[in-house]
Structures are given as C-alpha cells and as structure tokens.
Amino acid sequence: MHHHLLSVDSLSRDAIDHLMRVAARMEPIAQRRQVTRVLEGAVLGNLFFEASTRTRVSFNAAFCRLGGSVCDTTGFTFSSMAKGESLYDTSRVMSGYCDAIVMRHPELGSVAEFAAATHVPVINGGDGPGEHPSQALLDFYTIDKEFTRLGKGLAGAHVLMTGDLKYGRTVHSLIKLLSLYDPMRITLVAPPGLEMPGHLIDLVASRGHRIEQHDSLARDYADVDVVYTTRIQKERFTAEMSEGFSLSRDFTVDRAFLDRRCGRDTIVMHPLPRDSRPEANDLDVDLNGDPRLAIFRQTDNGIPVRMAIFATLLEVDGLIEQDLRPVRWFVPPRLGVDDPAL
Image (cartoon, rainbow, N blue to C red; front, side):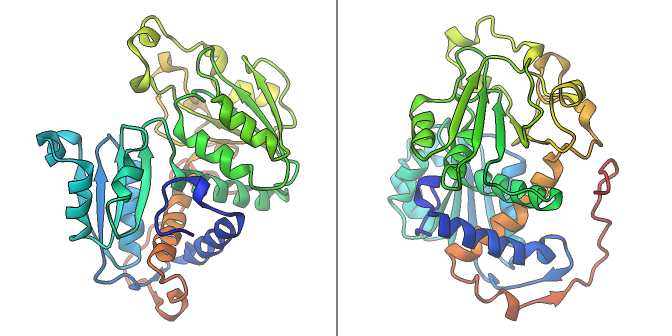
C-alpha cells in the first residue's frame, strides 16, 4: 500500500487482501470486546470541507479505537481556505500538527493536490464526483462477509448497481475495486443522463468482466447477488440538469422489487445517506428489519476497515496482537432495535 490512500488505482489485489485480513483482526476491537492503544499519542486531522456525518465520525471512531486522538474541522466557511489560503499551505501547516489526515473536498482532484504537499499519510474521504476508496474497501469487506454467511463466492457473482452512477463516487471506486477480482457480471441501471462514465465501463470490461446496461429496474434480476443503490447527487448537478429533474418510482429499491424481481438471498447495500423523503424515491424504508437489507451491517463494517487502513498506513498492523486488553465498560447488545438475527 502506498504512503497515501487517494484512489483505488493505488491498490493492488494483494494490498486489498492484506487490508481485509487486518480488518478481520480488528473486529473484536470494533465490536467493543477488546481495547488496543497502538496509536496512543498519534493525532488525526479530519478535514471535511463538504458535509458529512457518517464518514467523518467513522474515521474518528476508528482512529480513537486504536488509541489515537482527533482534531476535527467541518465546513469550508470555517476554514482559512475561505480567506484565500491555498491547498498547498493548508497541507503543509496541517502536516506539522498531525500524524495522518483524512480529507473530503467538493472538487475533483483536490485531495491528491493536498496530499502532494505533505509528508504524512493522507486518506481521500471523497473528492467531489471522483472517488471514495475507503468506502469501496468497506463495501467489498461487507460483500465478502455476506457471501461467506450465505455460502457464496465472489467469482461469477452478479452485482447490480443502480441510481446516480455518474456523480456517485462510491460506485466509481467500488467498480474499479471489484474489477481486480475474478470475472463477474455487473449490471448498471441509471436514469437518463446519470449513467456510469464510459472510461470506467471500458476499464472493467477490459479486465474480463461482463457489463450490461439498462434504463429500468423493471426486469428479472433473480440471479443478482448484490443490489447496490445510490442516492441522486443533486448537489453536483448543473443548473440545467436540476431544472425539472425528478427520479421515477421505477428506480426505487423496495420490498416489492426484492420480492418480485430478486432472489431470496439478494443483499441490498447503499453508501448512505439515503434520502428517506417519499418523493426522493431512494432506497425504501419498508425494508427496515428485512435481513436482506445490509446497510447497517455495512456501516458497522466501516470501523474495522478504517482501523485497518490507519494501522497499515502508520505501520502498526503487526502490533495489534501484542496490545490487546478486555473492555471494562458496559457494552450494549450488538443488534439494533430492528436488526434481524442472522
């Protein structure tokens, strides 16, 4: 793994497999059964210049579970960049304060520009419509865990990606990551104008995967193993695109779609947040409590995966076993109020 984590492009299959193994070792810590302090004294700079709750807090929690501490900033207006400071200057200053930096920024390529000016590890927490590599890693970890539970393998799997495939950076990173593995079938279903970028389709196809594109969910998907659906990223639309745009109910993944068109073991994923307003036609809340809905298992998996990223970048991944203690505080049950027992 490189000095930074900016794109899935920097990851080899061996590096991904290593992160998956380290993440599995992190599970008892992430699940609050054990404690480690391997990053005691280390400081994380969390620079989020675009709105975030889950990703920001997930990175915070992962770093703290390893014994480190976090300095947080959120919002562009609260940054000196609003006063005209360059990414270069901000990067150089922050690297004097922190041992690692996570950055989210609304502009494509901005995180890589920031990372070029620093000597401490930088993790891309999302750069506009570009990439979100840690999300792809936790998504892959989730798929692997769900397949293991169901007795399935990744080779020959059928993955359906739907929603905003043009601006949804999570699907850009995930499809590139999946393409590093044995050939599978990937079906892409997007509203007109929001299709997956052509260069990504060409890349995945060149690696031996079967790609299909449709403009509707109204067909038979009984052999689909994973439905990965995404919110429409209206904040990235041009004014012309925004005018009069509304998502048809035909693109909604709900209980009726799963029951009528998918298999009994099809799992449903979403990078969150999902837009729960009825008019949004995003992933439907009627699936809450359904064992096929994996979105909360997915978010839980973000902690061990991000712990693995920090441990590997800061080179303490080999020290975890030597630095474990039992948890001393009250730990609530792992299942949420509506979570099914699997």
